[in-house]
Length: 164
Image (tube, rainbow, N blue to C red; front, side, top):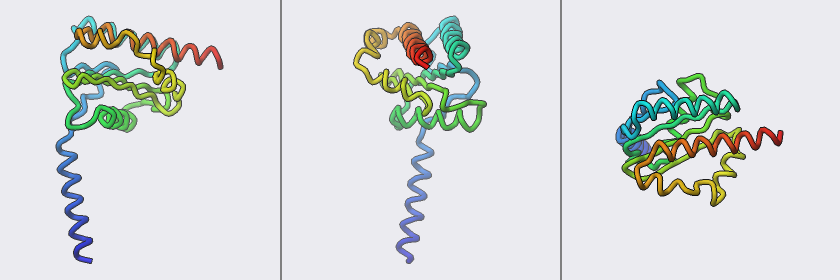
């Protein structure tokens, strides 16, 4: 019995140490958070307006986070943690939300639609979904790439909406 308790205590300490290693999430102030400083102020505003337009036209909230890095966490786990925090702390319907995370230093990009938006996930798995984005990201043209992502998300949601 003592060995089980000792093992559990060690496991709890290991998990606590792991949690301390995770990067802090950005403040939940805006639909666009650029902690990496990859966008100009005007670009950030335009990207935010684009996300707000998607919401106004479709009822789907797009939240964009540009991080310097998500390490030591994988971008998928970081995005999931971000989604859970927004769900807890903001007036957010997770089923009608899409999280877009760009990790500049890691050169990774993640789009995580809510459970009510499975059709978005299916569309994004198609080979052409991200066509033309790689060169933009490679060239550091993050604004152009993210505006293209927003446009594609809007098209996907509007296409589905017209089918309904």
